[in-house]
Length: 237
Image 1 (cartoon, rainbow, N blue to C red):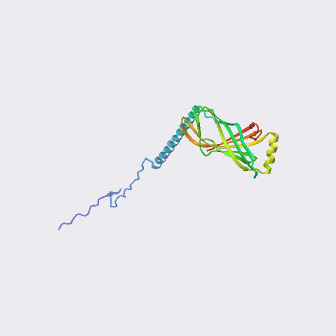
Image 2: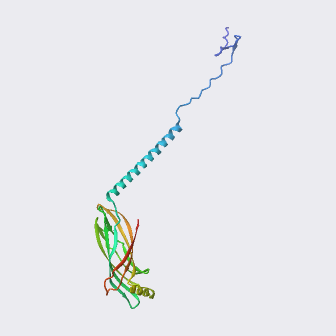
Image 3: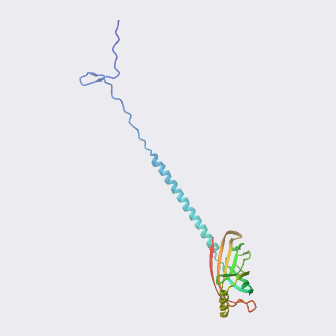
């Protein structure tokens, strides 16, 4: 009976003595591969590009808005309207039996609009108050109207009121009458809309304080004459 040949090893190594070594070779190790692309740096550069684009967009927008505003300002050349009290008429200034004071004034305000392309719309909810020594004498309202560009308008305001007239005010008024210099304060509060080429813009509130010095307040004597006047303006947005 034939015997099978012995098992032949798959690997045979020879040493210097030509003797066989049945140990298999060491296993091969997989060498890691490194890619040249860097995903972290790529995402960072994209964010930087987005920030640069946003900055350039806002910078260009600011430049455009500033140029448009400068163009409108140079084209329109806006100016503040000028106001002054032209006349102060006394229709009634009577002390009643209960020591209250009944007054009725007609104040004529001259409104000068020097703008060539801008008008002013005077709205509702205005108020005009005349005070003497911090005491309200009478009050009224401005009429609602549109003042066109390059226009001068005379505004007549009727003011009426009944107020308490104590002994202190009577003495002060008597001294002012003798000197012929009676100080009054006219306070005007008017909502006004700027109108550019027939297009009304945002409404603002104009405050005008006029300190007047008149020579008399008697309706039976000569008309009251304005000796001096000072004006203070303010705007509420």
